[in-house]
Image (cartoon, rainbow, N blue to C red; front, side, top):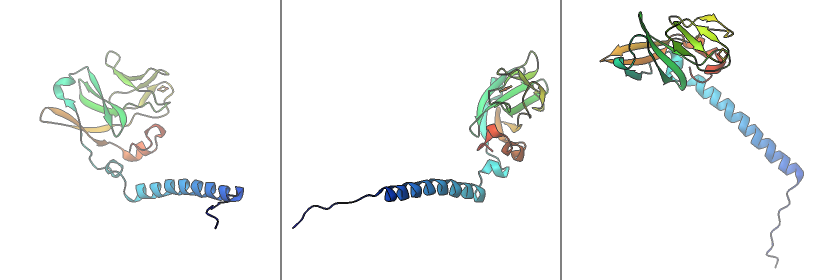
Length: 164
Ligand code: FES
């Protein structure tokens, strides 16, 4: 009686298994895309996803505070005209823009990109498009980020992929 069991694995079989794994990997990406389409995140539907940024006292006029919104660096600032919030990931190559109240600009130090602190529009430098605005509200002494002002615009931004 022979107790030995032998398996023969051919190169062709190894190739078939590897091709199967590659197909499975690609299919999982397609399934994820389909699921994201069928059940988009709340923010992709333009729904509120309230995030407490901080107390009003933390951001007096002329100051700013960085926060995380939908996994992206964002900035709340208070100009003499009130609070404003924007995604702070520069639309050029993804550095983080910060508010310079002395110059009244949102400034990206990587390539001297400048954005309007009221609208997010590009004022100077290489950024191809504006910073996305974030709707905010003040409630009970605190500032909350509510949603992207324009979720469809956020979807067009490479640096924001997956954040809308
Ligand atoms: S990454 Fe902001 S200006 Fe280039």
